[in-house]
Length: 266
Image (cartoon, rainbow, N blue to C red; front, side):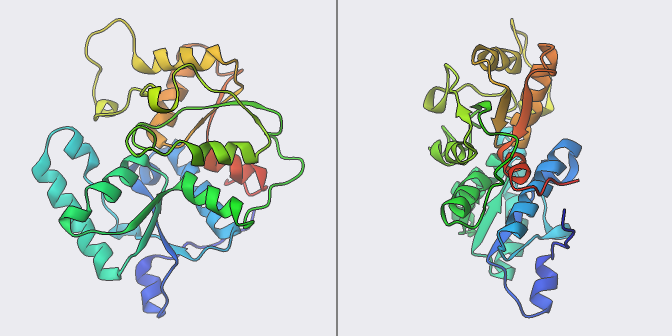
């Protein structure tokens, strides 16, 4: 694997340069050990495709999505205003992020606060890179012919109507894409949405991620592909709870593409 340094916006501006895209890492991608691997995979893909990109580094802070979903509008607006000031200060035009929550709130709720950017989910950006021939997959990559199902993140699918980009990425792997009974517009949440990720679930008969794992197991898929760090955590926990970790693997589509072009992050 080639080692490279991802520049911050401050470093690029100091050199008189401006990147094609800003890679918004997000809280999970910055601090969660499992999600860090997804962050590295996205960075490796952008580097491999020779995309000029930068990160904010220490200047990036939470988008305010968890605060807003938990009902604290005041905190959300404070966090959003801080980010918008930084982004506008750098003249950011295009943002790519691996988190559908960041994607949704920056795309749909930042504009009314003065933050207008072209925001893309990493599945959309990777699909574009593949269609433009900027990513070439290895002939002997490990996903050929594998039975794969895709779990639609709420804020990517039902929230923003994007169902095809992640599926086109999976299809580019020459894999067997199998849909769950509840998919696309009728998909089921992983159980993390609405700030549920950060609290105990209300009393009920079954954890939502366990229910969603049952949908996965019905497909007999060997891999559950995700496009969200929170979905990744919830589906991984669900697979473990079902004692199927030996037969069902949970991976982000960025990790799969990174593996398929032999640039697996360490």
